Image (cartoon, rainbow, N blue to C red; front, side, top):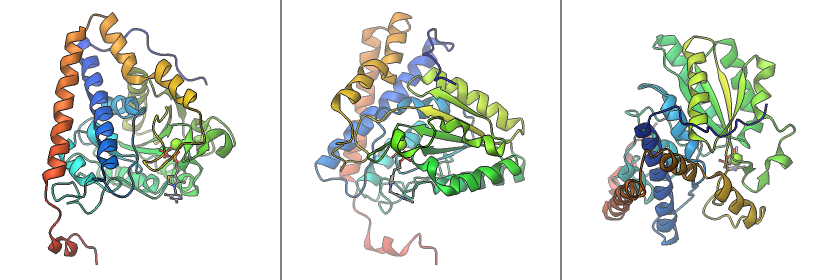
Length: 329
Ligand SMILES: Cc1ncc(C[n+]2csc(CCOP(=O)(O)OP(=O)(O)O)c2C)c(N)n1
Ligand SMILES: [Mg+2]
């Protein structure tokens, strides 16, 4: 199956489209700011940016309902913002401050929000996949008709625990959507070098799990595929696989010199497939928004992001006594 073509005519209202634009832009500007703070030495440890992949989470969150769960890898800031977590709390966690989601003790890869049903932030490649099935098991047991979005990468798709999870999720008809964010690289290894067959969405065939591939640079196509997957899960038909073809513009993490691909390759995607530019075009050509409207959104987002950076710089470091809290022993 080929990746779906760009949705030509939006099948959502102008206001909804503007909302997707705003949400994607928030992620992009937030990540750019995080990159700056990292460069200034205000963020320590690992920091994996999501720039380029914004349409994946925004499209899938548009298909989710209140109470649905989500969890992902270490490339997690976009997921947190898209599910409504507070930018201040996320940025302050990045700078290791008291006002952060994990009180400054978790950092970029380890944030959670029970309120927003966000279950991490996982640094071990693939580790979140069985946990996602576990969450779905709990929902099925409770009979609450909730769905869990379990995100992982093309590299993680080669992990053994993914297939143990597929088997169990299929046996128990768990309401879990396995979202493979195929950004074409696992650190410095391209998908061509790491993956025996190009179509990762077919990997559930051995377990009877249906799969579908979707253009992850097209927020509307992602939303549509997400809705189909959600419907499948809520109907009690078990798990579903969505392979979302996307691309990360920045290095694997802030310390990646990105020698394994050319600048031209990145530039080409930016120019031809950028998910935010695509929606911007739709808004302008469809006359759903004027240049001025979009400038106003830009300004509003900049304000939110600048405030989050200010909060992250001024929130105090965790008190020493925090060393003894949140310990499982
Ligand atoms: C079990 C394990 N092995 C290796 C690593 C080191 N590592 C961190 S990210 C990564 C690549 C994963 O790539 P992918 O799943 O495609 O996700 P992406 O970074 O592209 O979002 C590797 C090998 C790790 N964190 N955990
Ligand atoms: Mg990858």
